[in-house]
Amino acid sequence: MPRFSLFAGLAALLTALGLGTPAWSQMPAPTPVQSPTGAPASDAGPLTIARQGSFFVGGRTLRSDTLSTVPAYAASGTITVDQVYVRFQEPVDMAGRRPLVLVHGCCLTGKTWETTPDGRMGWDEFLLRRGHPIYVVDQAWRGRSAAHPTTINAVRTGRAAADTLPTVFAAGQEDAWTIFRFGPRHSDTFPGLLFPTEALEEFWKQMVPDWNLAVPTPHPSVVGLSELARRLDGAVLISHSQSGIHPFQAAAMRREGIAGIVSIEPGACPAADGDMTPYAGLPVLVLWGDFVEESSRWAPRLSACRDFARAANAQGGKVEIAVLPEMGIRGNSHMLMQDRNSLELAGWLADWIARSVGPRG
Image 1: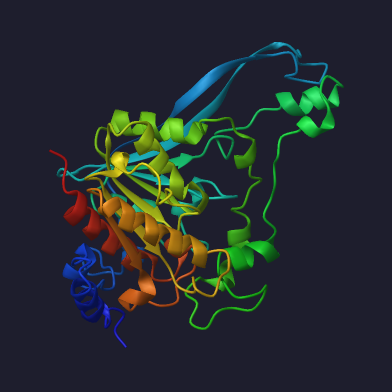
Image 2: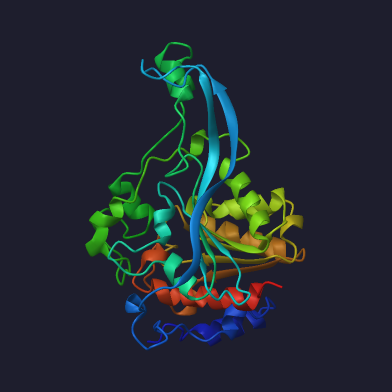
């Protein structure tokens, strides 16, 4: 059965219900991704880029007397905290294509978007080959955007009570199995699952302790995204899972520099009864994989995102909800950017961006 056999029918149904014709209904179905020479994209040949590098956005100065409990390093001093690390690559021929900012989710880092656990091309390289400047971030207090020890050392030295310790957690493999929707319970897989479970040992190595519940308000990752968007002047912010809400929060903080939002399986969408002004006229795609209705964690979140889309669009929004099974594409996990059809999805997404967001002026 073709992956998009339900495409036309679904579009017709939405139109009949008066919900408009979604942009994805006017696009061709994704086809196996090929290089310009006809070779599979996983063997697309040498990659030529114009520039690459890294930098930080955001951050603030913190003076503390609990920097260290190690005699070789002074307890008192000044450090920089809450910064967000950004790695970038720019293609030789951008041809007006939008810069894309890729933001990872819970318990992970920017590695999410790089080479897949089973060794295939990641979205960062594929979208770069499609001509987009790519900016991959590590959220504040994650990966190369390190946390700081001051509150921990304050407790350790007796300056603060134990209940002031920051909240930090790790997602165990058993829990992550169902959260990422590899299956209904640990070690059981959903029928037709497209995640490469033979490479799970490599995937588990991507996971890191999560400090998201310990960061200050406003969330420093959101502050960093807002600054980065202004620098890039017309970026599409692509987020995933826990960070799914961040582009919306950045837009609410300041729309400048944000040309569009792609939120992949967000942990939350903006509340349907909230202020929709920040999203008026802003192209937004909320993308979902398969097996959502089988998950008590994710099904309510999809429902809430549908409510948000209706509320936003009633007030001038341009929000689209794309659920892959409703489009004839089945088997995708929560980690759809690493699933076996990840490049087909990335190609479809690049087409959506070109059509719905458009080129830079």
